Length: 436
Image (cartoon, rainbow, N blue to C red):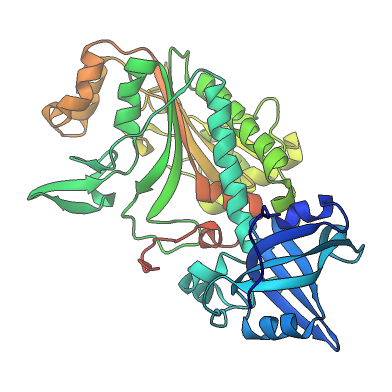
């Protein structure tokens, strides 16, 4: 089971169709599938770029194929040969096969089938292997492209990328939904969001963004909630109100979808999904109108999932848009740093963006005057001294500002229309799962 590898550069599966017919090539990857048909065996190799077919006829090569099961890692040298029936119209013939490790154990799920024939718990339990499935892997390819698009869109608008602490001395939004940790004998918490830090950095860079994990100790056991997820946060200064924030969010989403088309079109095609069109202007309704559209009582303090779906359907039917922003949420449902609606303090200068009938983004304008923060914190029955480090930035001058946060896994789940957000999360952390 040896072959001469020296002097050959690796050819990826996707590059095989471009190789000169009759040339010698080296491909390396995992044994995706073996199909024995009489005197010939087809060996399908998988690498990061796709699948390549190897035609095995030689008795020694056949023995090598039989010795290495599916998911074994091998190197194959052979002749690039045109074949319209092969993946990409090319295959490798006259192969020499080298096993690059131990023969692999049989995988816990069949990776060569079009879809994994297993329940979600089994798929998650064996994530180290199940993510190798091409269709499953495609979900994270969409997420990765979205991250690149988010960064590129905001970089082009003069934003600076930051990274902020995930161990913090106090809760960002409420004390009931944080994970407490022992920090060298002192109480600390896993950050619910980078909110305080990204606002502070507006006082330095004016426009900042961050991509990183956030942690919510909310005992939700639903198909749309996680205890840890990736948040795409942005904050910008010198705004008029929350509509300026929404305009930047639209630009970010447009950049994300453009990156999906440019960099992950094959992944979308593999999943058979339709990528969204971000409208030139996202339609906006006030919270009161959203309640009416959803048929909810006018005194409801928030939109329930059923209400979100109803508003999403209305946006699709009325505006032809899969996106709709609901502005003016009650101040009672927003964090203390939220700016109230001028002229009517019951409502906030904030919004939720719904995508395909589900909340995707929360954003809005923040308070920026030091005195307003002192009043808002005292109104909650708290002592501003507990927020001294945060409030220092506002005591030394902060512009009108606002921001938003996109949940990456929720975005990807809506892109793929996944029934459960865990389907698109690499290693979910929720009420029950801490492994793998």
